[in-house]
Image 1 (cartoon, one colour):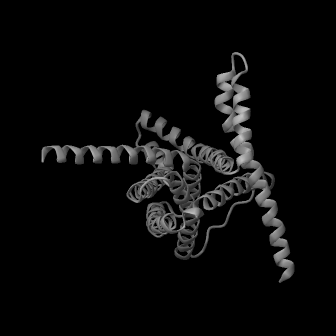
Image 2 (cartoon, rainbow, N blue to C red):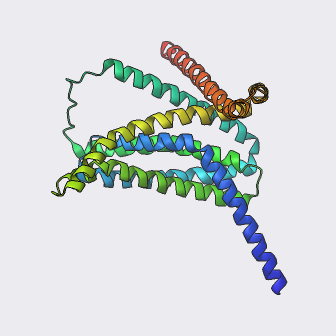
Image 3 (cartoon, rainbow, N blue to C red):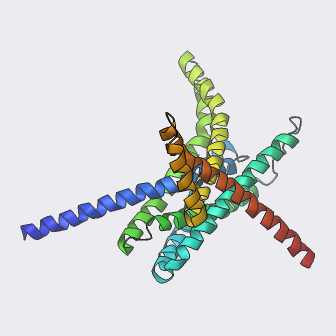
Length: 302
């Protein structure tokens, strides 16, 4: 009896170790989507009244959780009945990440080119309708990002048991939702916290409040930049592993870099990352061009 209990405990410990390892790997691979998710959702609250920011974030968080409640079971069904679909879905997710990265870069360049500081955006007249549109748009965007997270996680746990898949995918879905929207709630309130501290009349609180007020917009810009870079790295990495030629080229380039005297180890460690980034950018441009051409053909056909 005692021996059976010890065996059971050992099996549980092994399962938890496996789940922890796979969850860590899945979390690392979904980092690109996470950075973009943070920046995008924090931006979605822009224009909402200060007292309505947290209710809007909460509404989007509930929508995000519902999205994952739909996507995770669908992904598990695919893994059981159509496992051959996992790699194509991963590649599609990777290509979409790369495309989103290129779109973000182009949007940033266009914004910088056409920004006029004298132009002040008009506030919407119907704030209730404006909030609803914001929430619906954010939930739609989250569905795409959540689908990418679920597909990437599914690719990570594809070779394991169904129980491990259920535990890891559920854990990642829940952790990502709580983590992302918890951070979004904090980010959108940083400036309010800073403003509150500056009004307390104490020197150190005023200084710290001013630091927070200056830090908030810089944090948003940093998140956007890091998220964009991560999209190319993660998307390019997925495509790199899926395309044999690119994978062999990366291995060969890494081996060649490692034999360079003095700096070989450093170059060998960053070469795969640089190649993933390059592949991601190239793939994103190809998808963007293909979609632009297809869109023009479709318009002419109609």
